[in-house]
View (cartoon, rainbow, N blue to C red):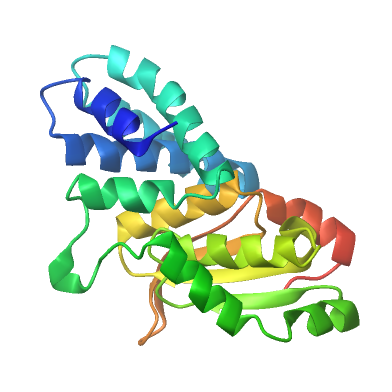
Length: 219
């Protein structure tokens, strides 16, 4: 499924909002739906409230009904090895270049992953898994590339990789959480300032639950 097809279908929906607005809403709605799976009862209730508040901003409710189909496109793209949401955000001008947001092509992310994961196989054999910290995660493209490199080593990233990801941008936080969720990567994703360590929101991906059962510990 192509990113251009996703953008085309998104653009055809409710004309009362711009494509970039609909993209941000799409990411937040999907985030709320999946983040509830690992949330406390109070947080789950807050996420449901956020979800419904966004729904109420749409005149054309067929847009909301179309979002699950778009979500399936994203899932297939991530499973095909794409930084699907990162590239879509760049093409929709949903990134803020003034704050340093830009799309990193997957071949570049893969090259950096190969360099950075030298010795990872030995660490996995000794400890059972490795941890990865990404303090400026964006949509999570570099993490997806790292997971693919680990898979090529013969290890399942859902069992042998635990991620901590941070970004100050809300849209990046949502995109990263969603893509790591779709990729089945255990991760703690935070919207925070990596320099001041001020945290605004945080969520565990659903794959973390199985990881914890397997290893009995997280970070």
